[in-house]
View (tube, rainbow, N blue to C red):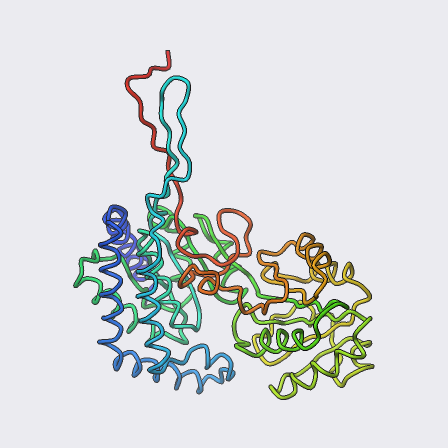
Length: 420
């Protein structure tokens, strides 16, 4: 496929998406929910085809030598696919943000002003590996009144095509506009560059993937970008921690699903309890086959590989955890603010005052007290399926649900007022 053909095809998709966005913006909440339920039915009806497509991707992934964690991110089975369909139906039950009046006031001259939520328009989403993102992105964009152009990674090409087709075909039975959900069938970086330059059609672009992909999009994009580079999440175990609770939180944060961005990557333990706590947590992590990489103080208490400077800034996405003993909470905060990707951090302590100090002094999107980092998630926040987790500071930050996929406009009403 030539560069010119790719550009021609992607631009044609952009034009269709812009037309679809205008139609989506005026759909009622009831109509959008009807379409969403039809999309869920479309996934169930096409389940056999989707699973066959996924098996092709898994076979290719094994041939390419993908890690077990990456293959797990890619894998669909009947239960996971049913969860995807149920997730679509769940979004249909969520409140529609479009049309919400954020503020309303009247000026002394009688002019009435409303600030109202409206769709962004056309959203481009570039992602890797996880085929469920195809569904999450499509349904959240639809519920918030946006058209979407999806570009998945080569690892999940067959799965993504099958899912996008099922969603669009199912939705069309209930009135989904043509071009509302489109998936680019090309996985080379040329298609990324074309999307990034297509500002006459795309209002926003959201890259979800490795640092290289995100940096490419940021460097090329001619429209706003919402992103997160890494999920380097930390847990700090304070001297006043309930140590049994702390072990549970660390193990869950690291091992419940290590291949995702809200998994724990660095454990910080206060030196006041290191000798007592480290053997407990190391034993629990050993059961889960977690490899530990520790600083010198950590290795004086438990067995661990020597941690390098690079380890403190690494998102492993695997059964690996870096561990450091720190002299105080202030030092823990300093370490986190230096090495964190500003995603999610948690403190385990029974000292409420210490917890509040920790939460206020961190510059991360999500800061937790006595909670697993795995709860940094749109569904766990009650948003339904999420479009991603933003570590940016403008427009959207943290888990992004329906509200984060809207903008606002001012609606001004009067009775002949003149600026004279």
